[in-house]
Amino acid sequence: MRRLDRRAKVGGLCRSAGNTRQSHDHFRSTKPRGSGQAHPYILVLITLGGLSACVSAPLSPDIKSGEGAYNTIGTSTPEGFDNYKIEPHDIISVNIFQEDQLSLKNAEVDPAGNIMMPLIGPTPAVGKTTAELSADLTRRLSPTYLKSPLITVVVNSSVSQKVIVQGEVNQPGAYPIKGGMTLLEALSLAKGETRTAALKKVVVFRDIRGERKGAVFDIKAIRSGSAADPPILGNDIVVVGFSNARGVWEDIMKSMPLINLIRP
Image 1: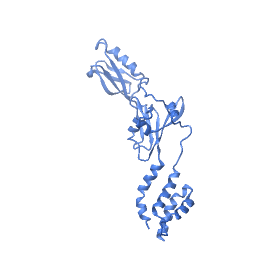
Image 2: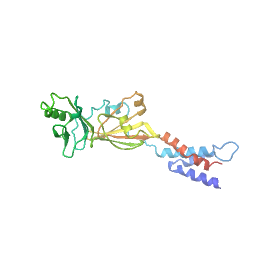
Image 3: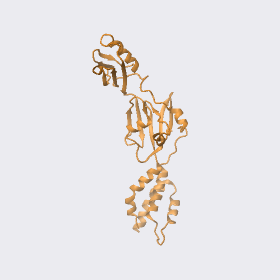
Image 4: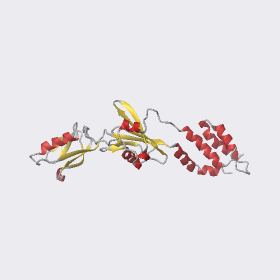
């Protein structure tokens, strides 16, 4: 009687999948020879298979794949923050060729919109592109302090330019974009995918001309070099899908103590 009660409890887990009676009929027909009892491994596999059916969800047809995905997102790596307007609290670097003492490394733009430059003091940075700020610094430093200085300005990170990584990753969250970023780099920021990630169902959502677009990519193909690593832009959302097959295997491994409980 106790064994029957345990079987009833385990079998009840997959009733929400809608195939309970069919699964139990098959379960009864898979008894080991010479035994009137069903094998516990079969019972657990049926149960977990029913549970995996409950979480299966196909991608929307509006989400492009293959060549259509790359047509939506693009294939060329973005050129960092060339057209980006610097904002307060952004982190920038000012590199002056052969003038390390006059250069700035990872300087934060203050709330007033300035950076503190050696020799010339507070310098307005907010609202300018990196090229515009570079030209302004060149004008202010030459010829009084430097002769024809070569100045490069880089935005290391922006408070408004972030990528959100969700789904089957180890550390979901919002991460600042640093220069030109790709899909693999975005996944790395989230500490990589989990063991149950569907690497062929990694979706990038992006607002394009006021409309939300989606594209699905195959991470295995990208890592092998057979597919391009698509660029990631500010305010993109990356969602890593769940693999039913891997999830069921994880459930089986976690259910080994349960198998011991229902062993004849």
